[in-house]
Image (cartoon, rainbow, N blue to C red):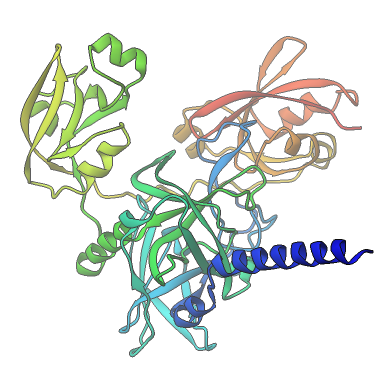
Length: 470
């Protein structure tokens, strides 16, 4: 190699190496942040009494949907085959040296005993001060003092693209650290009207629930709570509750053990481009009132069906998802201005905000199930009888409840807790009344034969096609 080419090669190598070192220096160093805050992050073990062969009915998720929003199961798997009473694992963080800890409500829901494990391996039995299912925030208290605490930041100052870091116990691996960036802010998720979620690409898995999301200043800006997944595991879409929302909730929980929210009594929907044009609006914004509750604060203020609410108590309503959060955060009894569009003109009224009903814990909707080897082998289904209470609750006259799902049923995304209402064979729909009748319908079918099941999940029914296994 000539001296000239050797010099060129050396210069190129030095330049590339320098560029790589510069890029490495630009990446954040999280070690100091973890050292400063790791001691304030705790592992939470929630012990529940075992319930043999009982499965909760599934919420309103449509079988066959390509993905779903999941509150991360606080244990070691998305669908344990048996509820054997093993502790569910989650994460929390200390916000007060007197022993107050924030976590997710779903981590400690119905726990008989809550154990908090510190980073130095000390363990404390925790008292549940209160929880709020509408925001998925819970406040715990342990009998200790002088504890390390986290600092909290301002989520409104977060920018899309900012680095963030999570500390938690994914699958029980305590003090695990993952990092990523803010993907979006103010996300609205199904059935989560009161939380403008922070979306990140931080790796979050079961066991991270309730753990802190830090900014680069070492301040907690959110509580890791949910993931969007097709598999039950991390797929790059994680969601955190903004810490200001959580702190407002915990303040009420600390003072009264419950959360009070405002309501005005309207059913609303999004304003599309077509609706905006039809109503004479300049663009698709606001919340369109589709129904007004009789005797509600909105009705008393003169708000009608077809009004488009554009601001409430001085806060702009950009989308329909903004309104529940703004109203919910308004003190019950307060008289506030609301601006709305009606008949090609802007109008204003005063609304005296009402008190939202307290959360009522729904009855545990479970079923004792018996296995059927034939059904389990042929369709991958183990089913149980639906109780009279469940049939009344779901307004169905028959049906069987799925206990386990694998093979053809699992591929068709039938899940434990689903209710099978009917079987469709050769164009004929047959209602399912009992496990024995369902077995009689399936057993004569030949391997590879196609059929359809009418599957109920929450209040939604849909047809699911599958083939009999050999």
